[in-house]
Image (cartoon, rainbow, N blue to C red; front, side):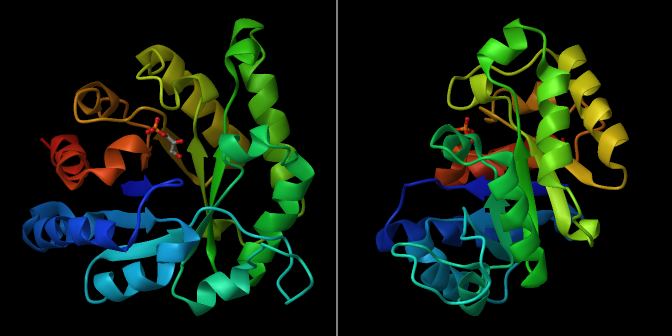
Length: 240
Ligand code: 13P
């Protein structure tokens, strides 16, 4: 199981102290061997966080990157080689918050290729908006995101998919269990041998429902991941 923390645009150097609790917990947690814990802080915190988690189970990821693997004139951008250089092992790509600000499937495809070429792993986000859900075009939407996003992508073992319905992010609303089982199965049939995680309002309360959905390979957690107690609680309850 994967437990991935997406801190989004939150956190400063002092926030890193909250990791101590999580590191301590992971040392004593019996199921630790079977889980992957990945923290994706803002880029400013990748290096200092990397230093804090050395010798622990926690790995570091970035939240986005440029589609080039070489240096270049692109003000404000960071490429995957630069992320690798400061300790990142994963990169989140295709997050709906970036799709909303204009990131296309094609651009996401280029980024996925760049990240894999750099030797990093991809957390590939897909998901439908509320409008698409109402129009009953969820599967069509996901199909398009997957087929363009993964076009000509080799080494797919370096990818995990995070299914994040856009209407579920930050709203407290999660999909109905049957719908979620169905959608995850649909994705798994389409991609084969890729782990599929769920993201969208995962918290210590609804984890008891979500953990019953057996075809989910882990969770991508936003808001609740900033609070170490909540994050630990989610992991503990998944195995209770
Ligand atoms: P929330 O858990 O805050 O809903 O965010 C989910 C998300 O977007 C993770 O990438």
